Length: 159
Image 1: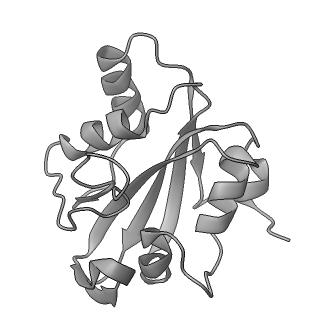
Image 2: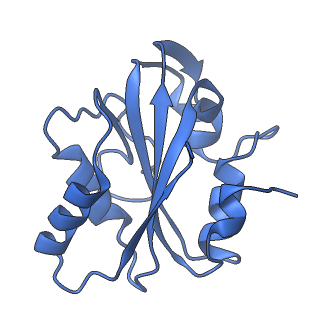
């Protein structure tokens, strides 16, 4: 049974951003995406969890080793350290809005087209940043863009 951060998450449905740190450049095979190069820095993976178990179940999966990879993230997460989870239990799926907001941050790049976005029109749901983004600034950006957005939480995994 998973202990630690995942059990502090709600089982409610919602949208999340998993912030990861890649200490050194790495090359990995990511399923049908093939071989991908991941530069060092911070990575943000955006998703939604509207199935059984909600945010807790999905993030428990993301924070645990994946002997049989299912999602694109399963292939690359072993090369990175999870540093934070940002989430909302807003009843509207916000992953596309969040992916767009992260992709338009200063210095953001999207080096792996289609990552986590095979079921939508987004370019990617995995965004690279040379510096760790700030939660409060991101929350302000989202609130300006979406006036009806629900509350957001930040869970720092480096505590």
